[in-house]
Every structure is written in structure tokens, then in C-alpha cells.
Length: 50
Image (cartoon, rainbow, N blue to C red; front, side, top):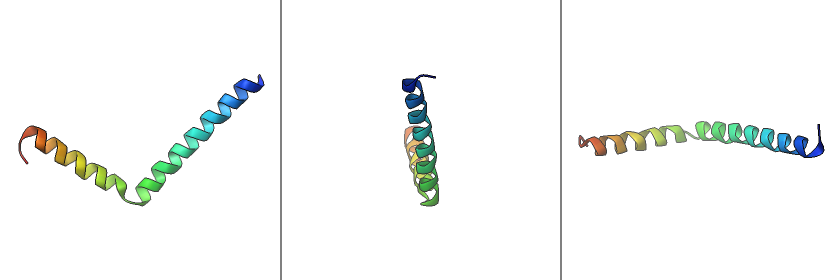
């Protein structure tokens, strides 16, 4: 493989690993519950129930 291709591949893997890391930190902080609550409120407002 060429050096440029290896660099691009390393960048892709680094971004993939960092994205999993940030998702894990968000789950540990309980932010998925906040997102779910906001999504439910938006859906209920659009339907007109809330």
C-alpha cells in the first residue's frame, strides 16, 4: 500500500474509535435519556397531544 492510503486508513480508524469513545461517554453520563425525553416532547408537540 502507498503511504497516503495508509494515512487515510489510519485517520478513518482513529475517527471510528473516537466516535465510539464519545458515544460511550455520553451513555455513561446519561445523556441518551435527555435526548429521548426531548424527542418524545417534540413528537407530542407535533401531533398536538402535549
